[in-house]
Length: 205
Image (cartoon, rainbow, N blue to C red):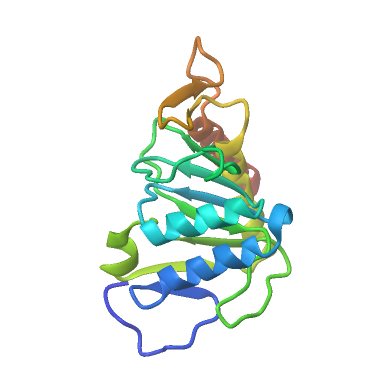
């Protein structure tokens, strides 16, 4: 998007700089109301907005499990006792400059207050940093189709796999390499690439 829409009433769109940030915080706080049954998964390039970070700490304090796949800047601390006990952050670097931002809330609700009947998936262009949330026109869209939610869930599963090579953020802000130590396989991006190719080949048959 390059400008404001005349419409100011959305159901599945979260639009910055108008209200994307406040709506994301609402979703985080809504998930926090479920305590240990809550779960938030974030895949993005950066997490650097203070209000978002504080909301995630608040969710963690209620028992919500927060899993993050962050390629670049991350001011969120992970696994710090009393602050972020239930937050895990990993970085997956691979062959591709892969830009998809996917945000999943186990108990999401749409902009109009309607509860999502399944985990809510948001996909779009916005990272969780002031530049994207306050100084640009950015959009996240809630995926309503079961097929699309399944595909987005598969993408997240590659990045969250316990078997792939990745770097995990430690409570002292250091990064530890996890997974196989003598090679760079399996690689989450390579797994996604091969999965995509297989799907397209099957569709052509």
